[in-house]
Length: 345
Image 1 (spheres, one colour):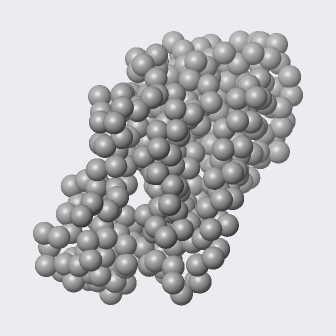
Image 2 (image 1 turned 60 degrees about the vertical axis):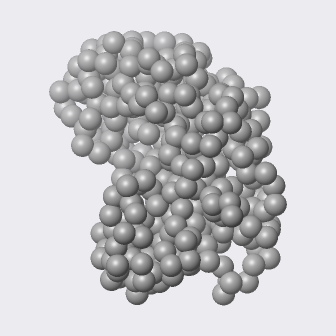
């Protein structure tokens, strides 16, 4: 399945970037696509090629970031280390729509580009081409959720941050294994049927098997959206026909209880519509990066309350301290979980 984030750099951007590339002491590194890339001995200024790479890089090495793909919003900043708030925005270096700000990239003088996502031949070839044209080492790391731990270890190896990467990788591996072990106790027929609602009307969704709904499968839920590929628009009548037990919504503007058709859906009738937290990165998707680790734990608690008894706010606070380098205040936790968990009765 094609990944949504990569297109080639505009020709003029490649030409200009080539002018600023310079030699550096290097060593060979084999990335997730099997490419042997000469990376700097000390990669001090790193650019993320797209949003999943930006999240990964920030969680491991915020001090190595040369910039953000996009500037953090005022709402996002309290959930990020203050030292990163004012980093310049580059746009997607090889992303959809060719949004890279060439001048910003030039000013940053990066010595490494990190990309995270698909590692198939198409993307390996693109990485080779951009690297050859710019002279900037460009590594591909696997964005599959199941390989989160491995991806952290690879980035740690290339940045010389092995112990820190091992700690985050161990957390990821342990969390994935724990959730899988508990969910395995639930018979397939008893697992909740879930609809993922994107957009203010809730009518864009990710079909089963898409990267956008990957963590639904990780937590053993049954995605009601079948028979399509990737992201697509559907009708309210189609959702009514699927009749999900639970709806997970990305956009806080989505209010299905205001629509007579939506009120016929089981999840709406029973009050099981939950908003996915989005600060500083969405827990479910957007981007489909390591930010989904806390989303997986949240979904497990949401869908299987009898199996997951731990204090979710405490887990959230621990995750944000480890991965996002911030200590959450009680107020910040309340904002995150507003609408994301069942209301207390």
